Every structure is written in C-alpha cells, then in structure tokens.
Length: 534
Image (cartoon, rainbow, N blue to C red; front, side, top):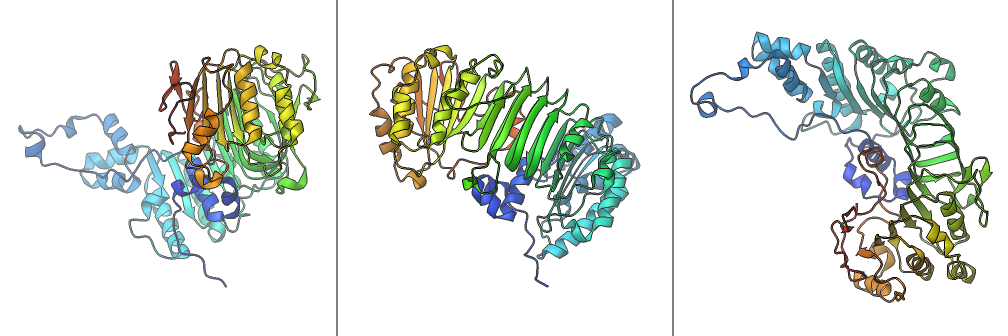
C-alpha cells in the first residue's frame, strides 16, 4: 500500500496566490483554498496568555479579576483556544464552574501542538483522540467547532460520535472538512439534524442518499458552504428548502444543476464549479449572485455552456462574473443572443453592479452590447479581460467602431474598471468606445495583467494607454492605472468578500472614495502604476 504524504496544513495564502487552473489540478492547493474560504475560527493561538505579578499590575494588591461577574468571566474564557480555556479550570473552584458553563470553540488545528506528527496517519490519529477528549470533557454549549485536519475515511465511527455530541451540546457553527482523498466519504445522517446550527461549511464529502435527507432540518441556519462535495441532482435544492432562514449559500465544485427557491436567500456564490444550469426561480430577497470560474463542462473547448436563468429576483443588485463564452443567459424565459432587441421581459432593472468576463478578440465579445442592454440601470461595470489566443478579428474591431452610441447614453455607469488588461487591440477598441460614449462616468481604473504574463513592463503598458485618442473624453473622468502581481486570470474568488453585505461593490479592484480612487492618484491618464489592487 502506498504511503501517505507527510502531514501538513497548507497555507491559505499559497492557495490564494494560485490561478484557477492550478487549484483544479492540485488537490492540496484546492484543500487550502476551501479552508481559506471557510469562516475564520473565532479564537486564535497567535496571542498567548500572559500573567503579570499582582505587585506590578496593581500596587494595592487587590485581586480585581475575582471581582468580575461570572457572566463576564465566561465571555473571556469562551474567547480562548480550547486548551487555554481548559487550563483556567485549575485556577480555583470558581474558575472550574466558569469553564464548564462557558460556550467553547473547538479548533482541531489548535489541538495538535507546535510539533505535530510527521506522517498524515499519525497526525490524524492524534487529532481524532484530541477532539474526542475535548468534546467529551465539556458539557457544552459549543459555539463553534472547526474540524478540518482529519482523515475521516477510516474514522467514521468517531465522526458520528462527534456529531451526536455536538448536536446534544448545541453547536452553532460547524466547519467540517475531510482530507481530499478519498473524496466520497459519506456524511453521517446526524449532521442534517443539528437544529442549533447557524453556520455550516462542509468540504470533501459525499451527500447521503436522498432518503436520508428527508428528515433534514436547519431552522436556524443562516450560512451554508458546500465545497467539493459529491451531490446528486436536487440535493442542494432540498437542503436550501429545509433551511427557512438561510441567507448565504456558497458552493465550490461540480453541481449538475441548481434550482433556487427561497424567501430568505440574500447571497449566492458559486466558484470553480461545473454546473449544467443555475435557475433563479423565486428569490425575493436575493441581493447578489456571484459566479467565478463556472463552466458547463470540465473541458472549456467542448462548447457546452452553463445556462443561467433569472426569474423572480426583484432585489438583485450585484451580478457577475457573466462570461459569454461559458454562460448562456436567460431572462424572463428569453435566451439573450447577440443582436437581440431588449423587451420588457428581458430587462432587469434592479442590477446596479455588473461584472463580465470577456475575451475581446473572440465572438463572445459580440454579446457584450446585448448583455448591457438587459441591465439598463447598472452604475458600476467591471470587466475581467480573458486571454485571447485568436488573431485580430476585424469584424469585432468594427463592432466597437460602429456600436450605437445611444447604448452608453442610456446607461447610468459611473464607475468602470477593467482587470487583466494586456494592451491588445481589441481591448483598446472597447475602451475607446466606452470612454467616448459614457456620459456620466466619474471614475475608471485599468489594472494590467502581471508583467510575467504579458511580458510588457508597467512603463510600456502606461505608454500604450496614454497613446489612446482621448480628444473626446480626456477631461470627463478620473482614470487610475495600476499593475498586478497576481496569477494569470486573477486571484481566486473568496466567499468572505462576496458575503460582506457592507461592501456594495465586491468586484471593484480598488475602492473609489469621494471623487477619486483610493490608493491611486486621480489625474486624467497620468496616474502612476501600482499594485494596490483588491
């Protein structure tokens, strides 16, 4: 039998520096990406406990800690890593009572110690034993449990016991991630009956049979993350339907189809996934729909596209990244095609922030005018320029030269950015058209692709942009020009970014404050280059 690789917890920063294709090819990088997408544990081991002598802390020698209420002490203990919280129980009889009543956070990575075993099997055994002791020693409640370091294929009895204990002890937040191989370890039915959960993230599992989900109920669940989980058609639909207060749904990995019917959903994010169709059937509260690297087939050259149907979503404000090469957009029962004339049924007026992935040198670019006409009230437009290996297409260049200027007059776009800019002729033609015809544009940004990809220096890129004919738009708006040090195709999308409801524009590579962009000089076409991109 082949030996397992040495145990290591991949660095999330490493995964976020990878491009989308590296994530798919490397299971460890994908595991790291999934962990980085999950919520951060509410406790940390980076700040250790420190005790000062009473004479140094309080010259009068008074024990001020003992004067605190039990409720406040419980709150303090609940903010400590599990091991540190347990150590407070030996201080005095009162502290033991405080520890037993404090809602604790169990993070398995904190239980390994500074020198975990070298092999994956030994480390997994140590983690399993430590988690079992921690869950058994405390009567609850547990405010959260992050179990992300185990190899659960051979330890399913332990997992079932943990879930029963967590259910009995009222866990509210659960992050449950298996190691990548094997990827079809079934989730115990017990998980789907923990009624106290408010946040649940699962990674590298297999959904139980549909019959086992009949009794599933999450009456308090507000956030659900499903990452690299083997599911059957309709499994996630059923889970969403049984989560009556669910607000955030995050998905990574293959899904045959998704049919969204929910009165509570506000945010749906689907990343690095192969999906046949996404149907927004009835979501009266949906505020944002974010798709990153979503395809209809594992093979991009297959021609199969993900069908995206937008039905009842009257509050949808944020939509992206729509990719004409990979997505087939349907609004109100009408498939949007190049050259289609807008009608009442194909116009969605609530969208204010739109992001598109466009290969300007391909035929997919011809879909851009048709898509923009479907969302006439967009105020912020963000373009991710996809790499184009095709030779210059005169027909597409002519598209922007002869495009109806009324298109931009009708739009309300105040902010426009383009990322992964390579200075190609097709990109410049689009920018020239857009800048000339955008009537209310206030702020724009151009973020060039990494110089290692383009082989064009920041200085050369700045010169290319500066040479655009700006006689008709030079004084109309502020333009920031920046560089990027990220991977080709941009950095992986992070769920935390899209689910931050305080951010009205999660697609913006920089934030515009007042009359100009933050972290960039606001001078028309004289902005210096930089790497301050979000």
